[in-house]
Length: 292
Image (tube, rainbow, N blue to C red):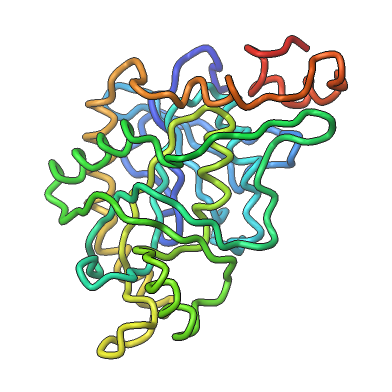
C-alpha cells in the first residue's frame, strides 16, 4: 500500500535499457487509473539513501511501447498524484557533435520538439494555458544531476540542445546532417512531450542523457543499431545508479527554481468560463489556482 502523505524525494524515468532501479528497499507498486489511462508500467516506490524514490519504466515491462505509444500524460499525471516534485529522465541518445562521444553523459540545457503525432499538453476542454518554457529543463536540478555524475566518476558534459524526433526509426544521413546544421547536439525519441508535461505539472525535470552512438552522420563510425544502444547503456548502468544514489542523498528539501509556479502566469481562461469537469479532471495540477 502506497502512503500518499509521505514525500517522494525523486522520480526516475528509465528509458531504453534501464527498466528497474536496483537498490530500492521495501518496494511497493503504484499503478493508478488517470484521466489519460494507466502509466507505462507500475511505478515502483521504495527507499534509497533513506529517502523515498519512485521509478517508472517509460517503455513498459519488456519494452513493448514505441516512443509514439508511450502514455506521457498518464505517466506524468501519475507521478503528480504521488506528490513528486522532481523527475530525472535517464535517456539513450545519439550524438550530433564530435565532442559528445559514445559512453559519455550529457546534461542538456535546451530542447527542440520535432515530433508530429503526440499530444503535448494536459489542457483543453475549456481550460486554456499558454506555458512559458524558455528553459525546458530545470536549471537547478540539472546542475545537481551534473554534480552527481561528476562525483560518481562519469565523463559528463553540461549544455547543448536535445532534439526529439518521432521515431521509431532512426534518422537518415540527410536528416542527421540537417540537425547538425541546425545546431542540435543530441537526438532522441522521448524527451518531448515529457519535459513539457512535467513543466505543466510544475515538476522539476532534468535529463541524464547517455550517448550511445553518433547517429548516422559520422562516416567513420558504423550507423546506430539497437544492439549498439543496449550494449552502451548496459556499460553505463552502474554509473547511472551510483549518480542517482548520490543525487538522492544530496537533494535539497526545497526547490530553488521557478518550476513550482510554472502555471502562475499561464492560465488565461476566466474562471466563470471554465467547465467544472475540466477543473475536476486536472485537480492535482491546478488545485492551487482553481477549486473543484
